Length: 269
Image (tube, rainbow, N blue to C red; front, side, top):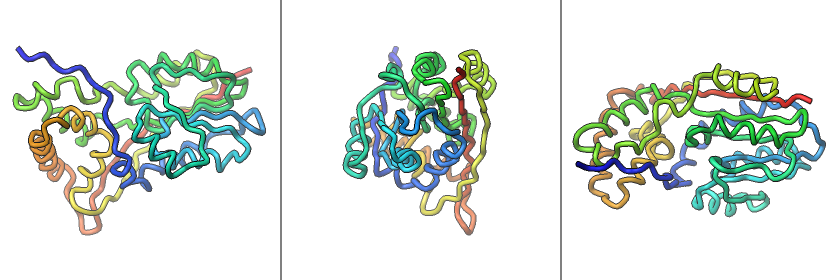
């Protein structure tokens, strides 16, 4: 009997991730617009899961006098961020264990917590570190039921791929229902707003949905098959064919509906 692999931290490709940076940046901007005034004029801000740093720079632009630190557990992402955003304060950290050092005015996280099992249990530490009136704001993809992910999981579970990919991909319950987040944060003493938005991204180019997911959701499979390029390419080819059927192109491009969940929690006095 083949033992299923233990899920590993996926390796990240900043260049691939940034190929769709305009679309990926939009929910960050939408979340940022809903963050209220912070307690301090020169706030202390953490961007948890900063990636290549292009979005973290927007936090520094909104609060020019702030001490903003971007945290990520990907050496590749931090290297890219340091190269392109040299003015940023950056540090390695894992959201599964990271706890703010000292009082913070804002803990911000964009498209990261879906990779953190048990992230609900991290909220207590993060809100505890907030000043009164401080904010925890995050956004996560909320579309594990979409063909993009469902087809990937179904393919990985087939007899050919299960021995290599069982347990590797994100689970369907990696993101919780909106009410679960609202309840958890409200019980921690936060005035909380939770909402969902479904973006209709129009992607262009050859196999654009595959190109999109190569930068995010497909990373665990690509990492697990990295030592076998032939198998990796075969899996990607089969998945590509499924995506072509699920997301047919139109004359103007290919529509990728993408639902995201947002939360802004303000700590009480």
